[in-house]
Image (cartoon, rainbow, N blue to C red; front, side):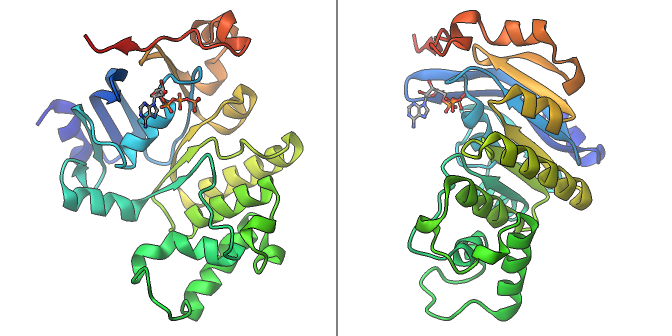
Amino acid sequence: MTASVRRIGEEQKLAIVVEQLTLRRGKVEVLRDLSLSFRECSVTAVVGPSGVGKTTLVSAINGLLLPEKGRIAVSGIGALDNPAALKAARHRIATIFQDHALIGRLSAIDNVLLGLADMRHPLSPLPWPGELRLRAAEALEQVGLLDKAAVRADQLSGGERQRVGIARALIRKPVILLGDEPFASVDPVLAQRLAENFKSLITKHGITVILVLHQLQMARALADRIVGLSGGRIAFDGPAAEFDADAEARIFSPAQKAGSRAFQPQEEM
Ligand SMILES: Nc1ncnc2c1ncn2[C@@H]1O[C@H](COP(=O)(O)OP(=O)(O)OP(=O)(O)O)[C@@H](O)[C@H]1O
């Protein structure tokens, strides 16, 4: 066992340790020898050009992608390298997905309850118990959507669906919350409100949060720390307040700022 993975049991302040992580998607090596750790109750924004591997990193932390090399350890669980650890991680980590991943024909509240799907048989015909419905209603209230609880997800706006996705993550009372562009489809004014509400929720519940964010203004406002990825590696790692124009330029080349994909991941030899 390597030093930083051992440290997770001893150093309570670390919630997650990523150590020398290398991950390939198809034939492309997306993340290369990446090491970083996340302190408990911290809010980290992961930024970088399109295709740089932000989603890949989040998917590795929530156990959806297994590292090819290196390891990921979560406080209280240890390395996520066996089925028992991955199962335990699923109980502690919740993820808000980029595409919301809602079921259109189900109501908002039933979609929120899907966050607890592992608590009962997936084909159970029984209604959800009252106390869990109450918990779902509370989660909807936290994102300001209680009045839409009975509305089908496919009749909600993009921003409302996004908020249902956030409520579905919150209902799990996660210790670690991962978000892949959680405010992407919300208009800027609502995104600002939602982000403020979100920040007070995570502060209140002492959750360790890692968010992939495209909007740098949002990253600076929401996060304590920014991690900037470029070329499969960490190009910036520091307090959000220090993520200045130079750091931004280092990560986003002018071509990428204009929307083209200048980043070319290293092809397999
Ligand atoms: N299922 C997959 N199979 C093969 N390659 C993939 C797969 N998913 C992603 N990739 C590739 O892996 C690389 C990293 O993708 P990833 O989604 O992690 O990037 P990202 O930084 O989150 O991008 P974006 O900001 O556009 O969401 C990209 O080059 C992408 O094309």
